[in-house]
Length: 133
Image (cartoon, rainbow, N blue to C red; front, side, top):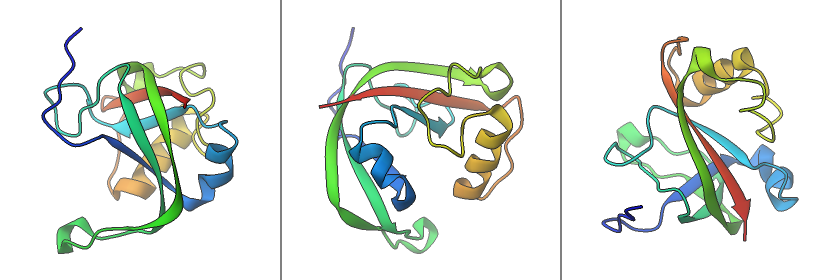
């Protein structure tokens, strides 16, 4: 396996409503839009140690305004990465994700809310499985 180190430590950001799930180490599946494997934008490697951060106040990327973060953060290891079309995502794939992302339809609504765009069954998502350190 090739480990790429041409960037700073990867960070997984979650909304503040998931803080208790993360502190309890219950949220172990993260869904992100697109293909997050190298060499795609926002890529991450299997077995990589990542920083998990909680967004206290969202930013605005278009205006160059970064988010404000909660004082809590933690580290996790990416133990598996799976890139799939939304139509191929299973209930098992979404196990241990956030409570509003446990079905395929809920996952699409969740992504639409966060990324402010429509998601179709043919769109790719990356499922990141993590273990907290």
